[in-house]
Amino acid sequence: MAIRLHSHTAELRRMLREQRDQGETIGFVATMGGLHAGHQSLIEASRGDGNFTVVSVFVNPAQFGPNEDFDSYPRDHDSDFELAVEAGGDLIWYPEVEDLYPEEAQTMVQPGPLGQRLCGLSRPQFFPGICTVVLKLFNLIQPHQAYFGAKDFQQLAIIQRMAADFYLDVDVVGCPIVREDDGLAMSSRNLKLEPEDRDLALTLYRTITRAQTAFAEGERDAAKLREALVAEWPEGLELDYLDFRDPEFLEDCAHLTEDTRIFLGAWLNGVRLIDNARLTP
Image (cartoon, one colour):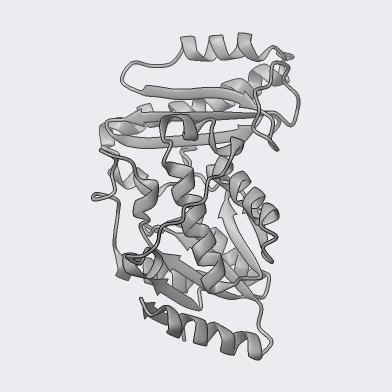
């Protein structure tokens, strides 16, 4: 039977110590709630690897900037618990803010150059907040493997870099993007989209498919392709970035290759949308 634990870091550590003593490996999926099929795929990947699987549900205040959607971010603990258990979660943990940010806490983790591009340019607090909370969670849970989706590809790259730089004994596993039937990348924030905004939101996915088609037809000039894609960008969807980057260091690519990824970020009536893909599907 799955365990539902609120707060209590000492109890969390005791439970996981018991699992390790019994020879279990620990898999971990960090979420902010609003669980959907994308999260389900991460939990299933952990279970498929034979892990005792921990799922955290915590809306992390440190990664939200002023006037962002911290207060309105989807929260439904009962629904999240049901999905996590159905997917194979063994321990669903709901920490409180004071568990991860006690009053005396002062230290934040700065991600370096990887966090200073793409989403990091328009949301400078975002990746320091993510790195800080993930490092805290890794230290509390001490997982053997941690699973993150490739929709947040920059986040995945930063966490993998952090784990390597700090010699963390955890394998950070990247998992494929899960999409809705129409191609929209699954996100908890999709719940906040008005029905009439859905078609505009699909611009990101359509732009990806146009870029992949252009590449397949021989386009290799990143600046030229970007100009063509931006020229087709619709009114009403605020473009944050549309960039072609290498997958390791996320540096700009002037010449497109099969490994180049297209990255997009946008705002739609206050809802944050991001997507990315390899130019060769």
